[in-house]
Length: 272
Image (cartoon, rainbow, N blue to C red):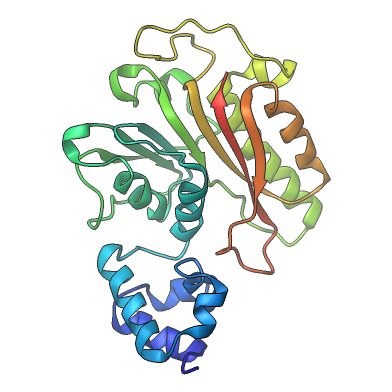
């Protein structure tokens, strides 16, 4: 077999697959295995590997490595639908904006992707169109109705993605607590503070389009929520909180996640 990490790196860099700095985020091999199964990989020679990388590079020249996580989630759970409305909390560097926009379908299908981050994020020029916009702001401080005003017709979002993560200090308990705080904020914005605290769904009126009309939630009925957290004992409450609120709530550690990372995602499908 003619493939090794150096080979993957050279080919990916030559083809524009991903930047050198992004390549340090996770091993090239683990990312390549998102494109083929392990058994297929073991049967490939270097020429075949080149062809697969080249084909996928042409279809999706991605901004960085992080979007492979959302690609796996989208492939596995079908979170984003054509014409949907997506809110991306903690959108820097813009990787998930690309994936979300690509899954909205053709421009004529409509839809919107809104990214919010404490740093100013430029909309990536590749695989993003006029449906994508970014806002510089602190999610922890932005009023709920100000965020709602960013949604199409101010009716809320069909998908809310939270990739927010605290600046890691190395103190496990502190980092975990800050991660939970960010995750709870995403949950509160999505389903309403009262729903999160009381561990029960709020009554929510909706119009014929299924829009979230009550001021307590930004996520539309039937909508999906993804929250990134750092693994700890504290995150168990999230699953217990979300189970009564969603049709299904499950944990996922994407293949593209670094082996040393404690990042894990809570996938909540179908807001009740």
